[in-house]
Image 1 (cartoon, rainbow, N blue to C red):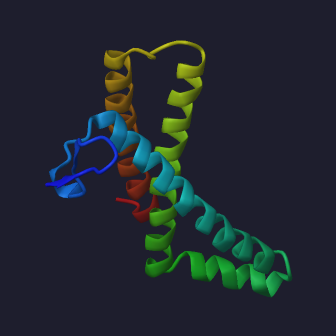
Image 2: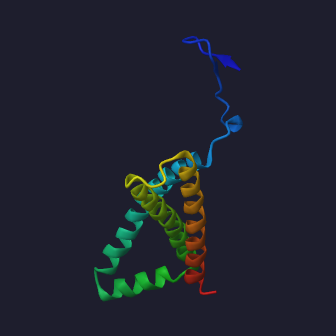
Length: 130
């Protein structure tokens, strides 16, 4: 373990040995899903632009969106959307003063993971019509 030259305390740079709390995982996942959604918006805006060009392009976009690889891509866009939405709602609730304690934060993070997982499963069922 490396010793910091500033204050003599040990510095752990091995990220595999750090035991993060569930709230940290919720926060990191919220940030990552936000980045994924930025890329998703670009792709979805391209589909929208193409579909509004002409009737033939609209039909082509419909055909493209019904293909299996694009459905998988849409799932990869919708899954982060659900997580980011639920985590954002959690943050809004925390802004109102609810769940700001350590235990409240843990419970909120667990609820976010569970609710978003359920919504992601329902989205998969909806996309593939099982």
